[in-house]
Structures are given as structure tokens and as C-alpha cells.
Length: 387
Image (cartoon, rainbow, N blue to C red; front, side, top):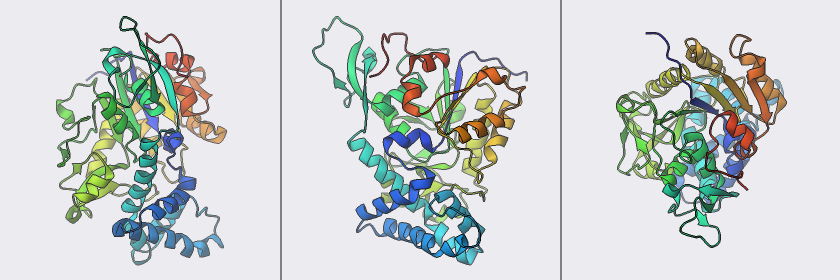
């Protein structure tokens, strides 16, 4: 079948830097956040034990640092070392790792949800005026549109990425993320948005999931595709299936609900040693399919780590038959990371003038009218940027 040309399909690729302004950790300070989470988890034995094992391995691994230059405070390098050890030495630490990672992210995300670190004032469309957590700003005349609201920044960011703030039937949006957190899902829930995880046969647990559509084969291609390449803290497996990852898979609204229902979080640790997970293989396949019709690629907060070389092959497989790509946008304040991402693309991809790296962080990119107009996501009703 001949490739199709798409005029407005944004594919966002998210790394840990995307969630930084919500207080979630980067790889190089993940262990510090893990210690903070451990203090708050007294009495929750499974979470305590998992975190203690990771921190204990950090202490024991210091002998390796005397021989080879390894940053043991970087979660990625620490866990890559554990992956390289013989099973009897490394597997003990890796076994409970999904619980330790999930507990840390869940702790940080709960802090943000209870007290968003920053809010923006935006012009709110009629369909979202009744959103409970969005604060009205001053007196409102019923005849005046649009209305002003004080809104958590990640609600605004999600609304811009997904088109919820300015619905357009010709628009498509895909989010490919290396992150495990559920910031985007929480924002979708507040705004009444919908998405698919791109996993055939994945079923909801006992907790009703209002924002997720289960079967991607029956979903319109204009539906938001939220594709989590390394898994998610709300994706679960029954404990008896956690070694094979080939049978029942269930998703929940939160990490806590997942554990309460006796499931094990489905998380692929950020290391060079990847597993053979059938579930995540489906996510990879769907990501390749969505990249084939991308009009714009927006890479946000991703550092191109040495221990995760697969990103290059994902792009190569997805862009092989793409005839629609017009521009690539890099949102990252680290010049070395910017250059690594630029170097992934050849001169035949979109040309050097169409690879743009002029936004240093997530909030600046989504709060700037010029940047949003470049990716065709600035709401037509807005007369001023978020403030």
C-alpha cells in the first residue's frame, strides 16, 4: 500500500525532562527522590523492601566505581550494572525494582496533584468551564467568551498537545513516551479526554478508567495514542504472570489501586539489557505505525542515553515510509542532548533548517505562541499566551 500524506499529525516524544516541572525525578536524581519516598512509606512493607534493596545495592556497588567510571547516583547506570551481574548477584536487586520505581513516582506525583507547583491563566473553551480543579478568575459576564481560568500547567500542556483546548477534526496526535508516570492520564481525566495505549486485548481492572479506550483495532486514527515504550506505573500483571509477561494484563487508574488488587507493575527498567516483553512489543509496533504518518516530531526532555540505543532504530523503522514529515522540534536546555538528537537525523530527513532547537524547557515551549503556532496547536480563540 502506498504511503499516505498527512497534513497535521504531531508526534511528541517525551523523556524524563518533560515531567520535571511537576517535581518528578530525572535519572540523575532518582535515588534522592527514592529516599524521600522511603521516608513517607513507613508501614508499607512491599514498597519499603523494594526501595531498601535498590539503595543497598547502591552502597555495595561502590567497589565497581574504584575500577570503572560509573555514576552510581544515576539510576540508569546503577541498574545497568545490576543487569550485567550474574543472575544470583544482580537479580535480587532488579526483582523488586518496578515496585521501587513505581513507589517513588507515585509519591512525587501525589505531591504535585495535591499542590500543583505552577498554574497558568488561560482563556477557557466553553466545554471545559465546569472543570472542577480549574479556578475562575474574577467576575464573569455570562455573555462573554472565552472565560479565564487558573489551570495546572500540565493540564494546559496536555490540552495543547492533544487538541482538547482547540478541537479540530483534521488533527492527529501521538505521544510516545519513555516515562512511567501518569501525569498525562490524570490531566485527560480532569478534562474528559480519551486515549488509547495501543495494546490489543488490554482490559480494564476493577477500577473504572474514564479516559482510556481499550481496543486500538476499533479506534479512529484521530484518537490520541499514548504509547509508553517502557511501561507504566498503572499497568499491571497478576503476580503469577510477572516472569513471562505473556498472559493477562490489566490497567488501573493509579499505582496504589494496582497494588491493592494484587498486581505487579509492568515496567521495563531503563537499562541496556532489554527483555522480550510481548506487551511492550505491541507498543513498539504501534509507535512505528504512527511515526509513518507524522507531520511534525517534537522531542521533549529526552537525553538520548547511551544505555537506550533503541530510539534510533524506532525512528528509522517509523520514518522509512514517511512522506509527510516537515519539521523536527527539540525542547531541551542541554546543548549536548540537543546535538545528540540532531545527529540522529540525516540531511535527507527534513533538512537542517527544519530541525529546530530553540526552546530550553517544557513550560517555555508550551507557553510561547510562536512555538505553538509552529506545530499548529495554538488555540484560535486565545488572544494572549498563558500567564
